[in-house]
Image (tube, rainbow, N blue to C red; front, side):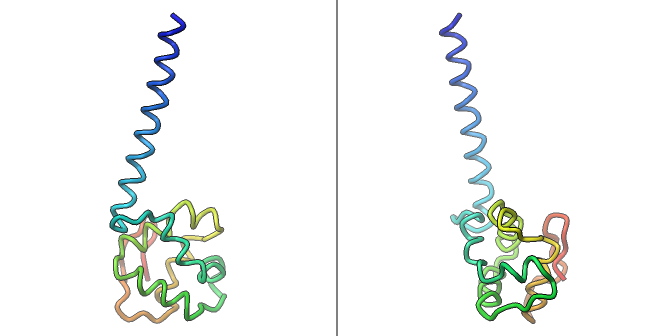
Amino acid sequence: MEGSMKNMCLLGLLLALVIAGLGEVNGARECGSADPNMEAFKLAPCASAAQDENASVSGSCCAAVRKLGQNPKCLCAVMLSRTAKSSGVKPEIAMTIPKRCNIADRPVGYQCGAYTLP
């Protein structure tokens, strides 16, 4: 009985790890082989602009958003990532950064979770 319980616990742990791993692989598809949580670090210059809609947006932030914005799915995944959320990013404000940067070819109207890029 004890061995059976130990095996069930081990099976449960392995199943949890597999499910967690699949989630990471699924999330990585939006940014190719890159993990959106890691890509979020590239938007560090946007930290204040992603928390306050009245904050100025730096040139380095706009450059990073312009580069990530070439793939709207990736930009969306990054803005909604755990890393962004834990950094205090407010998605409804972060979504305004491409417009605030005056990026002409930004994906206007792109649906990003519950948000739409203006």
